[in-house]
Image 1 (cartoon, rainbow, N blue to C red):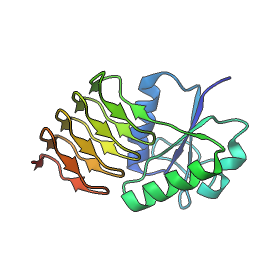
Image 2: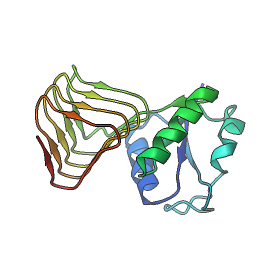
Image 3: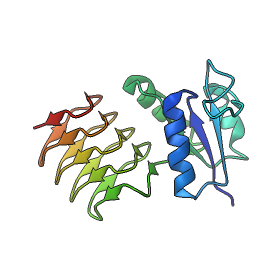
Image 4: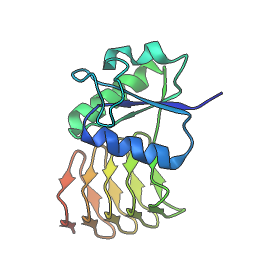
Length: 171
């Protein structure tokens, strides 16, 4: 069976997800759904709305929610998960470093040059942006966004739905 991906959202962040998914080289087809837009940032036609996702289950296997707002992102992830019509994907750039002992849960997006060190846990629906560092044995609760070049010190727990700004250090 071919692996095909639906990206929920058709804004700038969905293009980031699209490019990571392409770099992963494991999806045969990648398309977008969005409730407000007809064209994705890469010029592709949006194939439907969020309520249409299950209608595509014969053709698509995976879905990722690429929306910045953590409440919306998590709500959509859990709504899709409850329907069980598609698998919730995890996108990890091949240019990120992920420790073999780290655990990354579904619905998370890890961008290029991010570092997730030993014994870290990244829970559902997180975004770990380019150059971010999650140091050893830290936990990012669900919906966390660690922005570009932000750092989570070792042994920290970042509360759910927290956003660390670019360059910020959480200690």
